[in-house]
Image 1 (cartoon, helix red, strand yellow):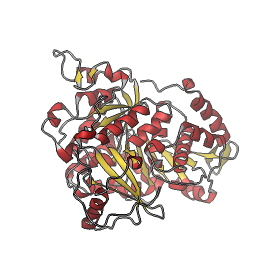
Image 2 (tube, rainbow, N blue to C red; image 1 turned 90 degrees about the vertical axis):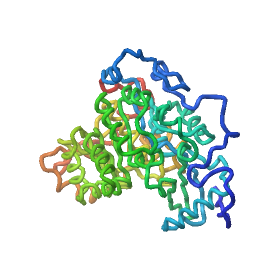
Image 3 (cartoon, one colour; image 1 turned 120 degrees about the horizontal axis):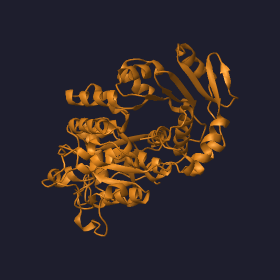
Image 4 (cartoon, rainbow, N blue to C red; image 1 turned 120 degrees about the vertical axis):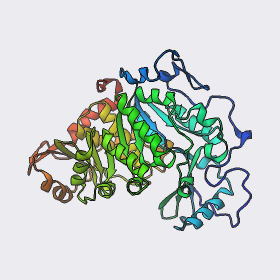
Length: 472
């Protein structure tokens, strides 16, 4: 991708605003509906009118409270955005005023469509769909070319979309606040990244006008085995709305996956509403996913395993805490065990989207009730496969790349690192490690051969019909 020079002056914006990129009616797609509903939902929904075919005599939430068969594997909540990926001579400055001016200069010359990519939670949904999971994305996109682009990308990947807003919310909305969220992904000549969006310059969430989630969204949550949310969801949805999402998922028996990401630290010191919503996610999620730094920022504990155990103790529904250790690998911590898996050695091109891909594989293992060490192995594999490409969205790892990595194992085993981390934490917990060596025990550690794990995973990925789901 060539470097794009920054315009020297700011022109009148007649196409994109710096953040949402203003609605352009002449570019609207009239040929297909905005939201491509999942087949399970479309039985009950009118596609454009977003109307449920439910008897008016039924109590408002009777059907939502009844937990039966769940026909969707994963639903993502919020954080639907369009990434515009640009190579720039230099990353924007730290000053808020200067960053805003920088973005205005970028927006004054609308980038070609080849620089557009699906971003945010689209990354996780695409990675999950490529693993064979049935996915929907719940959120809001505008009725313009950018929203149509996201809709088309997700449809082509086999992912359904569900509008989170109710008709009452959208009737009075127009302009920037209703448009598709845009994130500028800026890459300098040294391949360093910076991310900028309207959320950087607004005190309120981008879609703060949303006061409640639609009945269609509640139905999608009810029909899903896993609901994935991350900290960036707070950039577009209000804390109170996100708390209602957690309550809905708990009520209908849907497992919650939460990745606070870099926003976790600021949320923990944010407004009382943000702190309450963050604590709700941390306590009520079934699976928490964090980096070692993020775990430390939320617990004040530097040791990644002790920090994970602390989060597990604080949780009410928490079953797994997964700590990502970058190039070293990852841990999965439960109340009775610790599982660790080294990362794979690959040629890293771009780390964008690796964490989202990782989450998708964790959901795959959770839903299909795989052994925990197998789940970490496939998560590390898809993260590594994504790192070998450039960018996220449609550039996240394909199933074929994941299979190739599992067929040719090259674990980044660092005995000194794992020994230092694990041996002091054994206590009364079972510790299992993925390794290139044969199955066995050493210094209270149980080693599982990668060859064994790969022999169990590869048939499931190559012949998905052999995989059994978790009972619902």
